[in-house]
Image 1 (cartoon, helix red, strand yellow):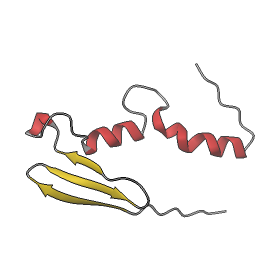
Image 2 (tube, helix red, strand yellow):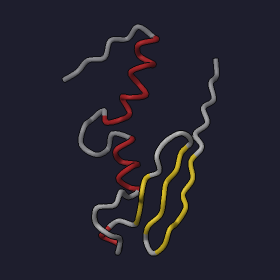
Image 3 (cartoon, one colour):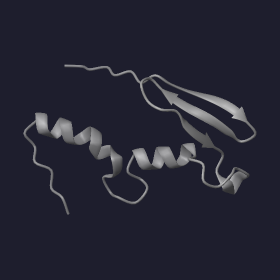
Image 4 (cartoon, one colour):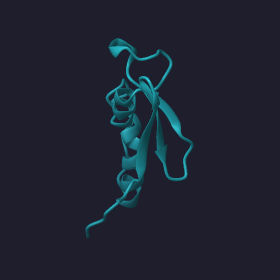
Length: 82
């Protein structure tokens, strides 16, 4: 069985090196260029969101687990936690 999911997002630049990331039904996030490339410190960057969402930023499973755990539960798979 094939499933299709759609995620509606948008980015609106607000000036300089910053913008606003929006998704249906969620509060907007202020985003910007990383400080290493001239952006302001303290502002989320697309690179941080990508790394955090894919589990690339420290925890091996990262936030990918938030998608994998419900699938595992439906399949009667018990996750092993270190």
